[in-house]
Length: 431
Image 1 (cartoon, rainbow, N blue to C red):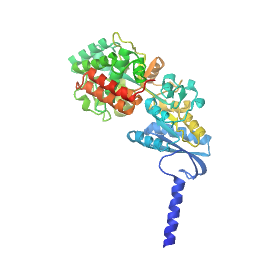
Image 2 (cartoon, one colour):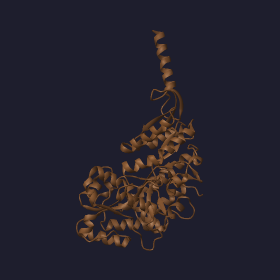
Image 3 (cartoon, rainbow, N blue to C red):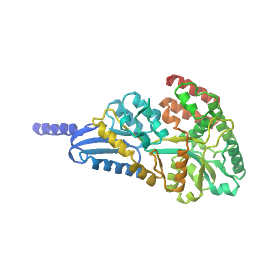
Image 4 (tube, rainbow, N blue to C red):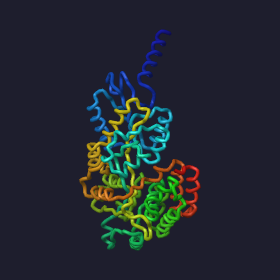
């Protein structure tokens, strides 16, 4: 009996040795996940389900066909759990060979810890939208390859605008007149679901950019002159509260979660006329209310009189961004996989099948609205990545909390700006 127990223990030990523990880095494995012998294994983590996941799997299959001696262990992790899981893996030097991020400050945090591979030498910078690539470039070194690109715009119902003789506003004052007309006709001007805080943050970021100019955030973030209690930030909060007091939004907006779709339903039903949202709204609409497509149009966030910004300054996000862990035992192969995931072939499938934009140059959407999104990005002089993806975690959360409080009229714009700057002094270093 003892001999049997001993044999079972030895078998278990051998299995653990062959399979490894959770987390990663590439391995030389005698038996990998596919049952293939003698193959190198690369571990790849990403967060997108559905059609996007299928596009990435096809890119992985192309890579494996080019490298028959390599097996890619493909892992899809739910978005909410991903950040924590990757942080734990990074801290234990067991990060996957290739992983997804949003670039910005979130990726830079790992770069500063020397956990991410510098892939500048293997990056064709002309292949990417420069402003998107800049989001994962630090000290002129590339640490991530952006595939996706999103912008936020003001979506509106064409039928409602036509019915009341309205035209898409280009200035804030014109926008206020549109809002007044809609209110007089019992139409909710702007649909908002702000329980999760980030939807309202788009208004704050856009107003700040229009008032203070596109350099405002970078200067405050890098501590090179501007601060988070700059008058432009205070004025951005004042514009938000002006909209709230004018009843520009649906009632109870700070208690409504975006993912449940209530704010989108207000648009589909014609109860609301406009919504500031990323172009992911189109994907939601195609699934939830495809008949609404004939009524949908968009305009860019209006300018503010006397402001330093204009409509070529767009709120944007570059994701997914593919990076390589520095602890990878097969850095060259991992870098090739990242490039395949950001190749023109992958980008075309990503755009055509998911309704998204891409950071890869020369890939133009075929549908008319997609072409207009593409034109807006092509004409952009600045892409402002979300503050909460760029700031350190605690400061990012404070940004969302204070913005939500400003929307709720629970905090003055001056108080919100003061809190942000006090925290920024603690969390940010002057460059």
